[in-house]
Length: 112
Length: 112
Image (cartoon, rainbow over all chains, first blue to last red; front, side, top):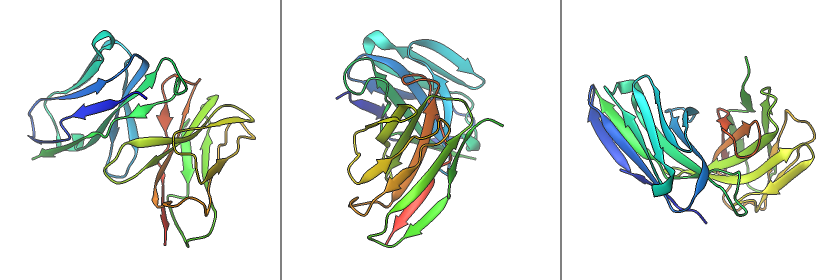
């Protein structure tokens, strides 16, 4: 089945710094989502981005489907950005088509 | 407010007992999903349902059962056959299978 790799696994930033999180996937997809999991476990939708570029405030994301990767940019980080960021992809063929396959996440800690 | 609710937030059970986790959505979504998350890991798909009265096994269905009698509801039963039931369980829904998924707040199940 499709493999999803996120990097780095852990990231520590000083408040105000910028960061880039990466998601590589091993096969073609028709769905890609970025989530932020807060300390209480809630998964918050950040982007639905099977291809192209989107921006939402200090966050932006780019997916290059032909090269099988997606990037999440966080600018001017704040302590409230801390948590785990997940990338999840939906294969566009096979038995898992329509489902989401999750990476293991990037754990971000923003220090004041 | 439209959203997905899960209850209870925390659940404690003795080994050998079946337990049912509730998931309700008022988003008018056709597709619903159950995921399991273990510490430090991404989410893994247990079951999904594309439409009422239909559901399919995900990647880790052994020891679990579901029903989908109403569009709004997709309860998950963790049976005594599940070898390692202690985990964080998340329910999700989407307008249709393969489209953007939205998650509930989760249920933390502890079995001793």
